[in-house]
Image (cartoon, rainbow, N blue to C red):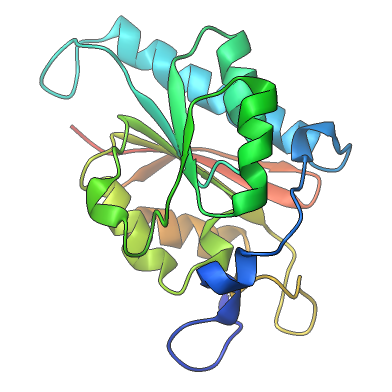
Length: 207
């Protein structure tokens, strides 16, 4: 299993609000290198949604909710909207708010995994695409998500290592390491795909 901590100290500077304060918006949906993994993430969300709609699970047959916990400029949310999936998101990078308005998606500016965590609505399906590698405590974040969500859709690079990684990343995982990260949060791995340099997991919490 490969998992690498890429920072020293308690809090990586790349996970702080100060680091993201002046960063430019990244329209990943319009970038050829990112669009395929966003489209695959959409497919995994829809697969979980369809499963939930076909089987009465999680104690009730009520509406299946979807939250994007680190939604960037709303690219995935817009893909889900095109599939008639009702979803909302959160992100704490100020420049991304322009994307929410342009794409017509529902999102809120807040520190999901920090001081605002207690007021976050975690959906039955929770999405963390290109998020966990930025956090100080991704293991705790996945466990926290597992307290509320039945499904998790997560993505991160799969080829990064200590000697070769994005300077904005605080963690790196190979395929086995990423599965272990998701499983320690109480999820079983239903699907694990590679899309270019990215790995995507659909995880389900056992009934």
